[in-house]
Image 1 (cartoon, rainbow, N blue to C red):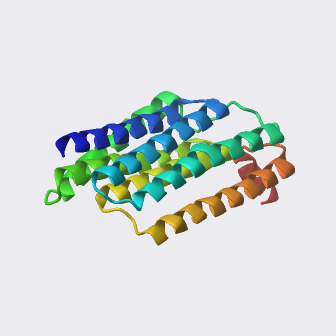
Image 2 (tube, helix red, strand yellow):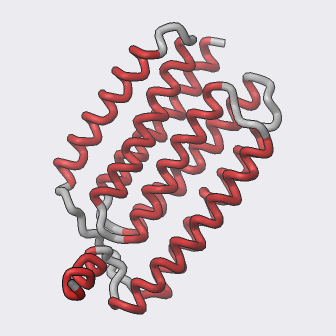
Length: 219
């Protein structure tokens, strides 16, 4: 059982590393590739949980994560970038170095908070939740520090990866919730796609700073 916990923590740790890699990258296609890798790691982690804890319904969660986030969504966003012909370098509100330092601080905060307030829980649950919370916070950080709308979509999806990891690592989710989450992700993707196309059509850019400039001109 200890070996199973170690493997689970290993996959969660790799997902956290992928979150830091997302913050580091400054090219859209590289961001999409790393996000796809993070989604594949999530699918493997959830599948491992299903196998070791004998919860076969989690295999459906793993399949949804692999199919939707590991393949369909990255391919859709890749085609969106090509179709829009957007600038593929990413502008950041905060420099890469400062962003990574903030990310390290958020990770440390996650570990300190979760390990402190869950002292009565099992060690595996505590450590898994701490890593999942760090991934969630890094997803928030990516959405805050990136001006490109597509990278904000990726940040949102990465945040949701952390939520799924936390849910499956604790006690898992009912099947109906897993399917609802999958459809919610698809709906969110469609909404974001329409949002991005409208920005591109109106401002000839997918930089959300254009929205702020337009709002300032109107005022």
